[in-house]
Image 1 (cartoon, protein in one colour):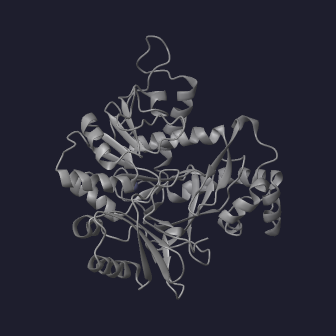
Image 2: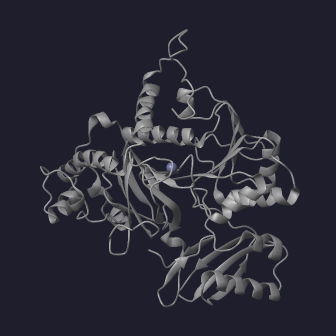
Image 3: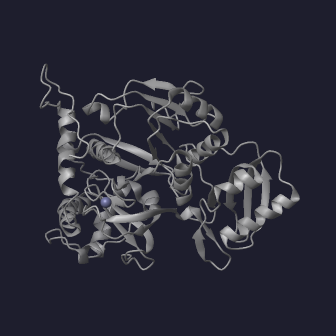
Length: 463
Ligand SMILES: [Zn+2]
């Protein structure tokens, strides 16, 4: 097993081989299978996925109003084996469907052995919340894939982990300036292993406070949002201070870009490990331990990357990410369009059969629309050096209001001169590809969204 260490034993005086308690044994059972299945071929994986999806489809057909209607429309026959031809006839489930018809997607006969049902509400990309019902079983799978992510990252969990993120209720995230010290890395790692300590700090802390806190704790690993990482990297470049123990960085929630990877390598000499997940379906893709590719987590979700005609994209093409959660029988999400875009990759040289994505590009909301209707990626469109070196912009947020109007919120000190505003207009025109009417608004601070995410660009025109 990759980077294996012996789990903690639940039996007195038994250390090797250890015997785990029931909760840990369940996770180890998933993990040991994942260690094998990652090497299956893409075709074999699809075969297993269809084996799992067939009972899901039948359950959805018989116990939800939504799927009974949708599957009747394509003359679905529950007795027939599932194949790609039948699969591709199933209509795409849109986020709008989920908002409008959520109650009709919930199974009227939940399966008892899948455990209690909980509801997750997510603001997602458009700011309009969707509510998803999930079983306790979904949570067990979440933990299983979280363990795989840990194994793949190669991190030594005996070392110190620093976490800077949104401090939700019961999150254990400490307030500035001191943060919080937790004796272990938390679930699911602490269910299996004795780990080193984790130190936590709320994302509400100023970057300089975060930096002081990091210097004090000198952690081996750091977990935070990409946008915060950029701010920290800029700070450390400026002060020249060093985090001498830092050997690994993981990011969460926001999309990562080549620009962010670059600044982390320049500042700390570290390659970021990124994971693509969503609250609705859990783990979608994790970066390969050997390469830059993201491996789709085929044992958790079936991922399709589709073009505008709903046909699968070829290698190198960018398309809409459509996911099917294999294990959520409480609220089946079948061919759910999650409103992200990704680029399809080749089979990975590491030998894993899990299909690859080379880039997770972003949300539709993060695309700028030109007056002729053409769209292009805009999130993180600016080079970070523009802010720090030339214009001393501390924070920027670009909001498309109409087809021709863009509002630019700025935190600067002092306010930009007319020449500097003109320079910024030119830079923005070039990176957004059109001479929009830019309106600059100076503010003291641009807050993150309630869930801690920060968007540098978003469009109010997106659905
Ligand atoms: Zn790989």
